[in-house]
Length: 294
Ligand SMILES: O=P(O)(O)O[C@@H]1C[C@H](O)[C@@H](CO)O1
Ligand SMILES: O=c1cc[nH]c(=O)[nH]1
Image (cartoon, rainbow, N blue to C red):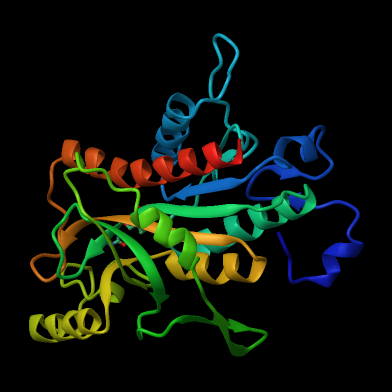
């Protein structure tokens, strides 16, 4: 895991403010040095569910009575669970929140000399022209102007940061479907917006300065450009992981077809079941990779 910051080499200790951790903590290196996979989701609950599933579905030995412990217990910003070589962390909503946690996690991996690490964003999204419940594996993350890079103001200037996701990891994930699955796994571009409402061409925000015709025309333009879903973090992953030399994939279930509706009205049970779909795909992948490592 690489960091693009020479200042870190001279730093004696580092505090990860949003994780409630520090390199000075006892057992810091041992806790993270064996990590091979980091799984992110937006919410704390889904991260716990993922960790719980990994605990039950990977063949990891655990003492009787073992319970998942939140490594970030010194803060209420994020939660983090470790299951063997897999770390599960939540990233909150959007580019800002996910950028903060990715900066800190990449540094944690760098200081603890973790090698050969893969990262996954396991999330939800709005589908474009595909049935709700479909799992989309992001081929390219694009911004709200459909450009494959992140443009951010740094020191008063706009800087373009290149993005890329792992082609080979994505190919493996695409093969993780099972004939018994009642959902499809497809590749597609993902639009990463700065906002859930106007930024995703929604007509139901507190502010909307366009009409249905313009909304549909934009979604059609995105669809024709290969975009199949919209969410709010894929570009952060595709830029930060690419620059850290980490294989990254973004796997999201779609909760609605944005050509048809803006509101997410499926039942809570259905949402819960759909949220497990991208987890299932990633767990199958990790399981097969761990078998190959043995
Ligand atoms: O991983 P999740 O499902 O939390 O991410 C999507 C994108 C935004 O963070 C959020 C908007 O509802 O859901
Ligand atoms: O429409 C949606 C659904 C989930 N997440 C998003 O960012 N957009």
